[in-house]
Every structure is written in C-alpha cells, then in structure tokens.
Image (cartoon, rainbow, N blue to C red; front, side):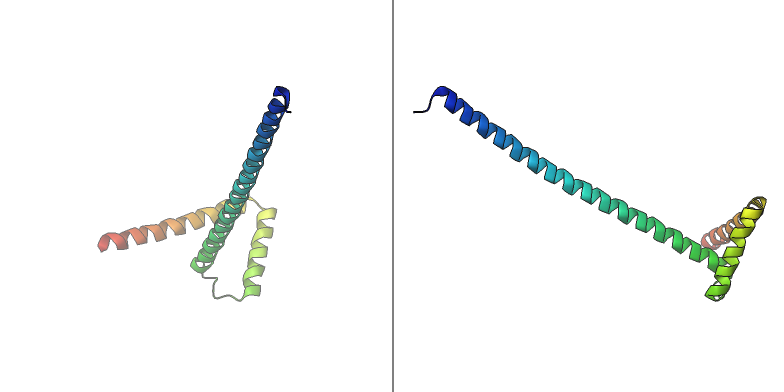
Length: 116
C-alpha cells in the first residue's frame, strides 16, 4: 500500500527526471547553436581572407607586376617588407602614390560611367 508520502516522492522524482530531461535537451540545443556559431565565424573569416587575397591580386595587376614570375614577385615583396622595417617613413610615400593611383582610376571610372 502506497502512502501519501510515497506518492509525493514518486511525483517529485518524476518532476526531477522531467527537469533533467529538459536540461539535457537545452544543453544539446545550446551545443548545436555554438557549433553553428563557430561554423559561421570560420566561414566569415575565410571569406574575409579570400577577399583580402583577391584585392592583393588586383593591386599586383594594377602595378603591372602580374607578368612577373613568382620568384621575382616574391623577391620584390620581401625587399619591400625589409625596406619598411628599415625606414617606416617610406610607407607614407608609397601610400600617397598608391592612393593617388586609386583616386585617378576611380575618377576615370566615374567619367566613363557618366559618359554612358
């Protein structure tokens, strides 16, 4: 014969089990959401990296260095990096020249678009 205390204990044990099951389901859902968030962060980082590589390639093409073989291009880039370490002021000179070329190209592009 079950007493009122036994019934109450059974009910509380069932409530505890239901709460544990609910907590496990919430943990699984949270783990799934974190994995999706990590995946999206990796995709975003990869896209940003690819975008930077693509832009660097465009700049190499604009500079006319695309026709160079890989060794020559890399050697020039390594030399450039060393020069920047030796004389940081040279970066400002290069930046002005690069910004001027970009502005010139943007201006040409706008004029061509307006003429159409």
